[in-house]
Image (cartoon, rainbow, N blue to C red; front, side, top):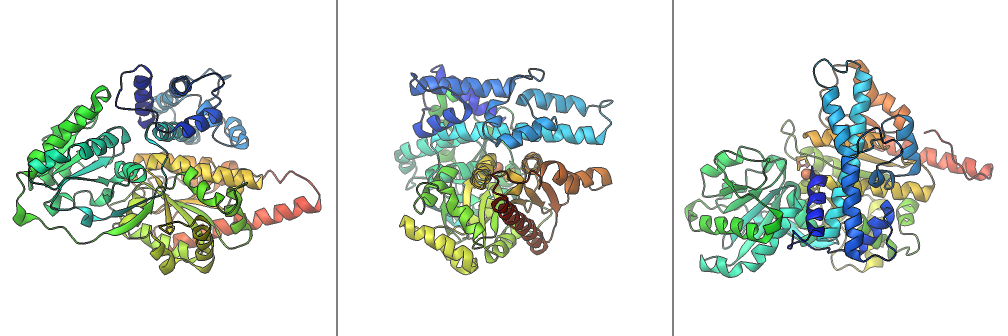
Length: 561
Ligand code: WCC
Ligand code: FE2
């Protein structure tokens, strides 16, 4: 749905119907066009963009049956070996919506009764999810800019009682980028109601989107989304899609805070609704901000209590930004900086810390414990979604955290990057790659490492973890992580352990077929042990394969894993 929305805005831009949006990042436009196979010769940027949007729509809407037509965006973003694997297992989706419709039909009463067949369809849908996440991230970068390193701050202390405080919450940069823009323009209006200006801050992945691109501070993540209202200093919470707790409305009733829904498929009884239409984006953002200004006048100053807690955050690490940082050490082959550090034993591998908060766990605890332990064991960490929110709030996206938690190898590795880049703000312990839609960035990093080593992704010492998984989206993302070759830890038990067959597929058979597999482990320390084992196993095999290649003077490495 996120990809559909981005593609729809792209179409409106092409038709001249969304004047508030422009192509912000030509380099990304060119890079994506080259990757997905859109010819650029003799075309201007608008024409290339038009072709890209057309292709995105085709990929989203293509039906099954058209077997000669691949899912371009997907098949050209992953390794050829992975495409062959997906084809061989009959789970290569042709299009996104068709696959979802098959899925829904297949699970209807009186339909498929074969658990294995159902699992395959689920995996196929998850791969379609990866393809569409990639479309969403690529188009967002083209329209709003590819993130670059940025310094900001996080936690409830980012609220300032002298300002009109607006929180943007949900997932959609299409709306939140406009709110940030309008808030800057409307400073005089805020001064008229007695405030020093307007302060926008973020919750969940809308927060991640505007942190990564605009340096907007982070308020909090999923499980604590009600707390900013309880400071008595939040004038409006503007929500778009996904992960909005309906309960925020009940909490807001105790204060002056306006809850404003903006999406046609996300409404909450009793909340304000501003129907956000892309053809009048900035106007709509003004409408939202006017509601916040009215609320500011109703504040009860006796009830304001903002915890004085906030931490510096160094974020903005798109794959392009990471490669830029590596290229200061090796301009000809940036990714080799990372793979060399693993080959030499300085780093033990890479872990993507992703996903949600889950109310079954102590808030953020699994995220924080695991990162500390992985850091001690010299693992390079990237993060997205609410996991990223946890690290931002806890001050773990800073160099100070590197000094406190990193083992010698990780410290030396990051120190070398700092020196080569002469960065004003030193690199953090955990690298923020964006919202949960942006998990494709993290997989692209794995793909780049696989290319450098000349292997398929299941041979790369790279694991994923969702320490506090919760949402349906996390199921889709975890499933494509496995299908695309990652050992994938989940910190809460999913609802499949009742079936030995299905659980066995997740834990073992997936490994035999795809090279990725799930690990369920609630204890964060034991989880790290399991992840380290998975990384070490892969590093050892890589070494053995490489020795064999040298001995027999062959280019091809063993096909199995
Ligand atoms: Ni993405 Fe999970 Fe947060 Fe919601 S915002 S809670 S899906 S990680
Ligand atoms: Fe998210």
